[in-house]
Image 1 (cartoon, rainbow, N blue to C red):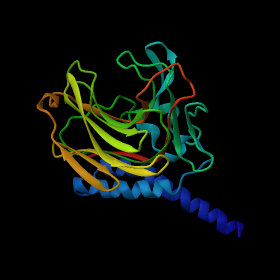
Image 2: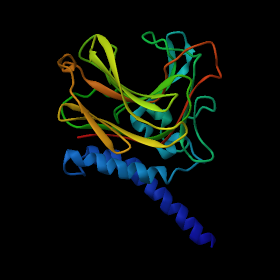
Image 3: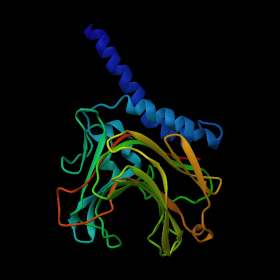
Image 4: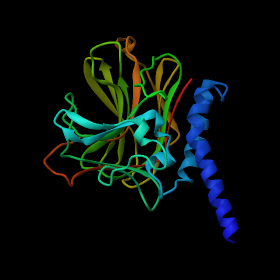
Length: 280
């Protein structure tokens, strides 16, 4: 019986490794057409969610070699950032207050209190991943091609609303705005925020409703020069304003709380069961 159990554990870890490595295979063109990426990313997400090891750091369950982590601590205007080299692997970075593996379900858990250190361009603290390249440089990709951020997650608590995924502007101009943000509201509404231009002016639209504590999935994508947002299998497309064409982009994911106060007990707790990024 012991040998069988050990074999099962080995098989589960093998599935997890394949799921975590799926991003690199997709980026290398292992999947033929770009439109097939979403389906395969969904399969990888399902495999990963079923195979999480609660005994390792988040980097043991997720490919964090292509992410850096911003924390709501540090000096004013300069939050602490953890590089990919420290995040990746089963013994990678973990923080019992803000970023850890849940011992019950293996999820990558983010806690972001209302009171915390912010960037100079925001009034809100965050515990959030920022996309990086495999060589350690900051990701900064053009709008051409296919780019997808896929996630399975669950919001445990939120005071007002929390941003759980975004495409942010990179090089190409002086704007520090996002192209889009995906929010989860305390009433369960999943809301897309789109900027009208790099100068700002966000418009919002409600995509669906997911009860607090319920697991759900999203894909944030740029496909054929348009935005595609998929929530629980339903996809909607949106045009990109011409003012963004000069900019490169990068993905972000985690808990970017959209309220602030002096409270360290109010905030957003977000649990990820799968997270992959793909470019083709």
